[in-house]
Each structure stands twice: as structure tokens, then as C-alpha cells.
Length: 215
Image (cartoon, rainbow, N blue to C red):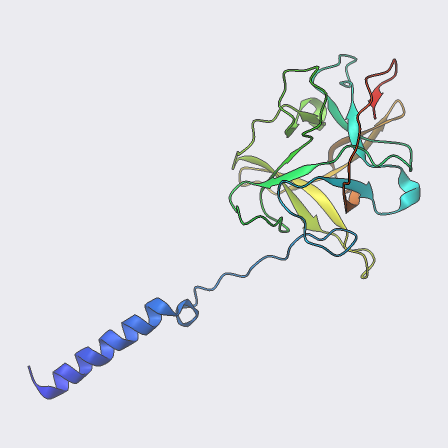
């Protein structure tokens, strides 16, 4: 092997090593998605409880549970409380693939009410049920049916978001409010339910009353 060939081989080896240790040179960089922020400007943490409140305080309270729309108790429907002073039930967000401990925008999530009453055998994980309403009873960890938190800033100074549901490779659909008989059900909708997140410092769940809602 000539001196020139040896030099070229060494140069090629160096370039291959540089490319393998510096993915930027390969164009293999991956944008890191922004974290979801609560009203205090802090990153949402996986496993921590958060209230999902409407962007405008006068638009009602947080998210809670109600009897099923068909009149039965189970499975519980996810609804918005009509009372502004009611924060609802804390939610927990669990990324399906990313386990870094921070909830990021536009990533696949399981959403759950860990404090849901034990009246039903359903798991406290959200799913899309009959009539496209959001109910409990999801199995979790699915890469086919999953939820996401997407930026939907209305006021630049206040981080606000919308919830969407994604199925397979179809376009994700907004989660909005469907008002029926005075109950504000969460359901697939063209208009999103715009929320802000507040860290829960403790909550309580009242038993089911003669009405529909659970607070």
C-alpha cells in the first residue's frame, strides 16, 4: 500500500468517526419539543396532579366526572363543572413513549383521573367512548388511540393549550365541550376546549348525588 493510499484510508476513517460521534454533521438532529407549562410557568411533571381549567375563569370550572350520558353510572363521562369555584379532579399525564419525567407538547399521552371513585371496574384512563364522548375505561399505553396536549395560545403571556385525540395515522381531532341537558360533556369537536393547567395541592371527591355530576 502506497503512502498516498494509507493517508486516504486514515482520512476516511477520521471522517467516519467524526460523523458517528457528531450527529449534527449527519443532519440527524431531532428538535426537542417544548414542555407544557402550568399557570405558574413551571413544566408539567409526569405523575403529578394538575387541574385543567378553562382559559377564561367565567367559562366554568375544571374537569370532573359524571354518570354516563345514557343514565347509567358506568362508565363515567368526563365533564366540565359548571361552577367556576370548582377546580375539578386532578389529572395525571403519562407519556406513552417518552419517559423523561416532563410532559411535552404534541407527544402521545395517557390521561387519567387517579382519584376516580371505585364504583366502576373501569380503569381511570381516558378513552373515546360512545357518541365520541370522553369516558374512563382506557387500557393505556396504546400507540393507536392516544391523546395529546397542543399549544393554543390566545394570550401570549399565559400558556394555554387544547387537548386532541389521535387514532392511528388519521388527523388528530379536537376535544371540545358538548352541552346536553345542561351537562358539559367532553367530546370530539371542531371547536377545542382551551385550558390552562394548575398544579393540584390536594382535592376531594364527593359521592354521586341524585343529579348527574360528581364533584
